[in-house]
Amino acid sequence: VAGTPAVTASAWRMQAPPEPAGTIDQGFDGVSCSSSSACLAIGSNSFPGNDDLGEFAETWTGSRWRVRTVPNGTGEVYLEAVTCRGARWCVAVGGIQAVSEPGGYQVPVADGWNGSTWKQVKLPVPAGAANSALDSVACSGTAACTAIGQSVNGGEAQSLLAERWNGSAWKVQPVPAPPGGGGTLEGVACPAARACRAVGYDNEGVLAEFWNGSSWAAVPAPRPAGGSLPALSAVSCTAAGSCEAVGTYQSDRNLNWYSLAEVWNGSRWRIQATPAISGATSAALDAVSCVSATDCEAGGSVQTKGGSVSFGVLENWNGSKWSVQDKLPTRPNPSRVAGISCTAGPVCEAVGFHVRRDGGGGHLLAMRYSSR
Image (cartoon, rainbow, N blue to C red):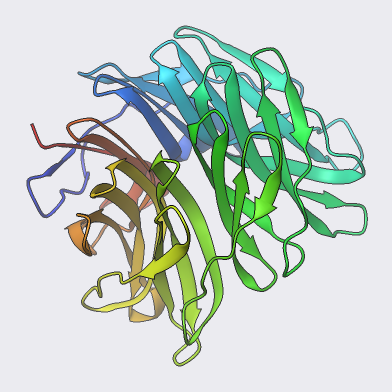
């Protein structure tokens, strides 16, 4: 693909996913791999002369990416996350904008992929919600999925949202209000049928919740010293007692944003040091995927010079420290890594968007890493 950026090290290899015909300003939002040769990525794009977004998906077969149409149904669909248990079993969640109703309110939605077609399901709406949507989903089996997000009532008060799939139907789960009030859940991981960890933020900062198979409960999570507005965006667990979460926070000293990483060791969350990136004035980690307690990949973006230049970044956790593994060029291609998924090996797929040398809107970004 003309103008596609090249990563700076040989570990990650740039791919050239096809872009949906007749669309502009594309970007991947998430990806899930059930094996090294079976991945599904979700994304959004827009059309010339039309500000409305369109949703699409692509599948990786081990040799190429292939575009898969996502049905809109009765309104505009916004898919935020996807998880796969196999090449023929994936579920993507988000919200659907009911354009026929006054105000075009949003309700939760889930799209199931069977390897060839999508089936869209409208999920139950929390009582009293004026708007609600899901931001992440995790499945410990095809009959055990948890999706999380937020809902907003008529008075615009936020509350946490969790829904559970039991193999035949989705059901809203009660989630206690966080200590700081308000809030949203942005990432979830379910290493076992009766163990899910969700992360996000509330009005006071970092938020973590745990589901034990019957109920949700808040779990204390530390906030960076000298930092404000901390938030966790994604979490990955290889066991009930081993999880990594990533996000961002703002420095009280210089008001710059810095990447945030926390580890769950089976008894508590603990902040981990993240590497400084030369020339960066702002950094955030948006996605993480672990194959073991000593091998995780995280992706996000970095800004320099007051935000005028941005580029994607990939970081690795080796069990003792986080380090920068790859950076995309800063010029002339702004970019961002939005999703990452790793399987045994490890073999990883990272997705997001980049801007080509000729400018214009965003284009699809996909990279593959293999230690084999």
